[in-house]
Image (cartoon, rainbow, N blue to C red; front, side):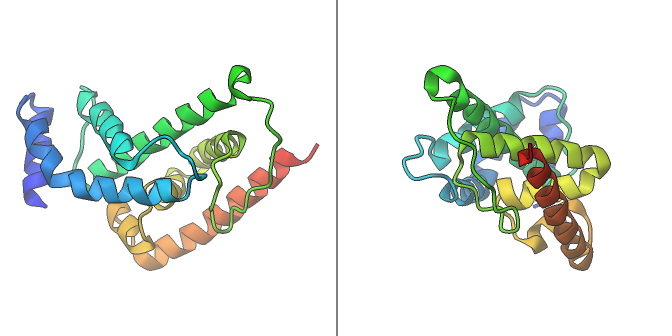
Length: 187
């Protein structure tokens, strides 16, 4: 863990070899997170876990303004990058030329198990952005749990909060998102 933190600091200082050293250390964990997230996608998904990891990694390391305080902070940033990649793909699939007039379906937010219908992912992203305006930590917890596939314990460690606090935040965030998504679907 200290090696990852050291390499992250070196990357921030402009060490061009840092990104080459970092990938082997974090690849397995990033791949596990991506595979977990993609396992919740609709069958026939064209994006592989490997491709998702690589695209997220390129975005993270290519961001010259990115600063990571720790390994947990890096993985939180990776979860956010994966979320943005999946959102971009959903928006692309939703466009009219790609069948953008799909029928809107209900989302079971209590389990956050989506079939990755583009509108559903976009609705969740919009609601999650609104939650972040109200409480960034709760929104980050949802990102880590849903988009990175982390357990409650893992997400609590990344956020620097107790498991009990994470459990309370998780219950609140699920209820908040359920309400927000339900209101979005009402005429």
